[in-house]
Length: 178
Image (cartoon, rainbow, N blue to C red):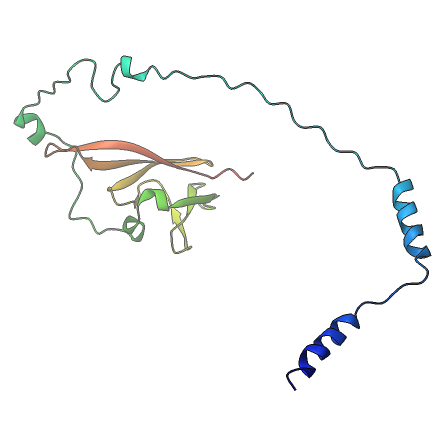
């Protein structure tokens, strides 16, 4: 049995080898391939010479250090006398739950009664809301002060970092479709 197994393996491997008496089709194939025009190879791209760059930043002024020391002198009376402050007693509207940058202007409509322009705003929940002058929106006590067909102008009341409040203009523009 041990001698029979190698003999069977030799027979099986030799059965795949077939002697071809007439290789005319092979010669014809080779002649056709040699007669066919050779393909062209694209030339290599030209390489541009590397230009050295010398960084001269260490000799320049540090952009994080002010050129002139900034001195702010503001008395405590000025902070207390600031007339700008949010109305904490006012009931907040639904659009004041979202940051202004998450609100998207999607269009405008005109009121048929008094021709008042009304802006349409989409919140992060993809709900559309009507906004008119005097409405509030955003987390920073924003109040709509102007409307146009292209943008909503609002004034936000933000803390100035010194115990007072300041007005900050902001706008929500209608996105431009490309």
